[in-house]
Image (cartoon, rainbow, N blue to C red; front, side, top):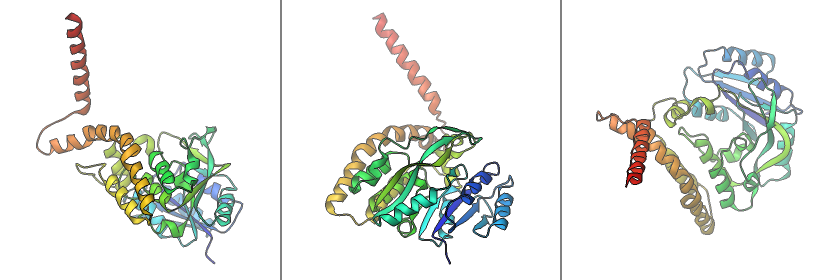
Length: 323
């Protein structure tokens, strides 16, 4: 008999914390779940730890990739290995309260129009000590709006740090490309899911979001570094461009009324581009432009450019004062 829920855990060099995550799954108040672990070529004993859990509990399966194929591949792999009506990703950084699966599954079963459910969260540190409630964007209730454009906007404009780890209907995830191999793919996926249906945030504090210095969001401090982690390779000169192409593909994939599509495009060409514009100009100067110029033998240092611009501004101000 297949389990009703599959939890996919993509991992890489997480031996210090994976055990805590798996222990939190083993303590769930419901039993009909399975865990699929995919180790992305770890070198610290993560796979051995995963195998030890799999040997103790047949509901846990551990796979090892022959090499690090990138975070995105690993996230797609665990979903493709699943065979349950409900699926969720779980980072090795995070923990579930014992009632997480029980409450999120019950909410999905009670409302057929929901496509995903997630719980409120508490932030914990590297040692698992509770710090404070985790703030999930400014208006998480908009993900549950009956208006597709409102859901789309909230998903696109806010970081999906919690909603990405919802318990989803597998049948809806199957209609998407899942986690793409480009920076910002989680946000594009959640935006497409927002077009497809409602995602509910429970008030119950049933998720523990870990913040520590080894995690991806701390260590990859540039678009190029993030791309290498996500895609497992070099991004080339046009790092960052892929998300815009994929966003438009996502909008085309979903069956929307003409009115809904118009409202969605207003979000794209209004608040989204306005917010993304500053980030993209900075990204082009930091990554794309230096890569392109480097290919023709011209060196360009973005930070040196900033220093020169500030110095030029100070000199202009000094000249005005002397006049």
